Length: 161
Image (cartoon, rainbow, N blue to C red; front, side, top):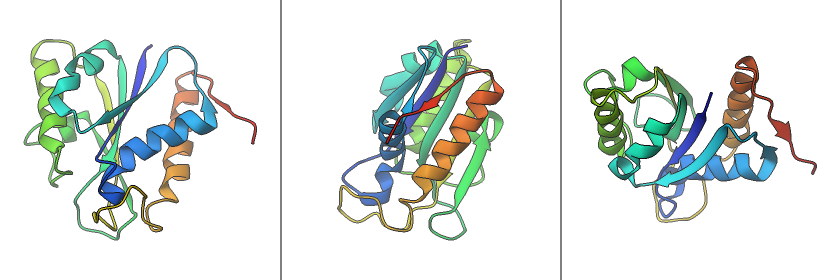
């Protein structure tokens, strides 16, 4: 099963870059087998439809705009993510991701297993660093992904320090 771990976000706006920082954190700290692709999607949105269509399982890592405390992690499954099906506004590139999934669905190539792991940002100020509130979520989201991949029979190895 090909799994795509897709990090979305703008690295120039602090926590808005969370998804990209998360993918980089995973790459730096874990060895993934060939059937798992980590992809820095940045703010490409609809330009990455082909990546979604090549996968059988997708994890989207991003920031979300939702009620709650900054740094809170939220999880949404495919049916909640699709246009009109999610009750909260996502990040500024949400339309690209949702439209990309919808386009893939209409073409018959969208996998059934799609999960958005999103964090509520503490800062969207100009900075290439995550805020101290959101930075610790990199470890949490990494542990979640590694654990779920293990359930699917995918062995991920932590790199030596």
